[in-house]
Length: 192
Image 1 (cartoon, rainbow, N blue to C red):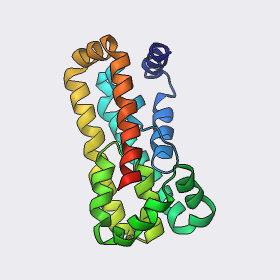
Image 2 (cartoon, rainbow, N blue to C red):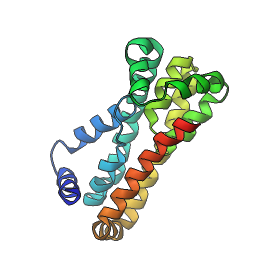
Image 3 (cartoon, helix red, strand yellow):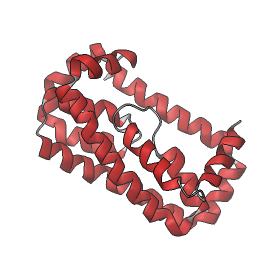
Image 4 (tube, rainbow, N blue to C red):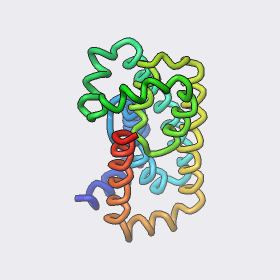
């Protein structure tokens, strides 16, 4: 199954709507979707190395637009949309503690968690709920997401053939590591 998904993603890179799919995943990941766009960005950039930076640009722009939606969910729709999302992920108790000091360190938190594999939607919604200064939020988000995606693109552009060979030989291991990183992000927020 993992091999079929990988092959589908590699084929998607050559599809006329590939950039739209990447934009869509990047957008919803920053507000409601649990899977990071890297899962699609990496195979697409490996399959089309000449477009690696173009794909990174799409991820960056649409991730920031999705982050604005996440902020708006927190700011305007906390009770109707934001709170149920946090309850779904089991973050409400931790969120109460987290909210107290968020605005003091909010810009740094957006930056740190925006550059990592931590679920970005948690930070975007939390920023809106706590009323983090929007300019600080936007600046920190751009400062985090831009290097995250462009560093990946640079590595994939430079070492594309070697990375593709590595991925194809160790697909199960890499998939397991991505799942562990994703779960670790959720566990990390649960116990912070």
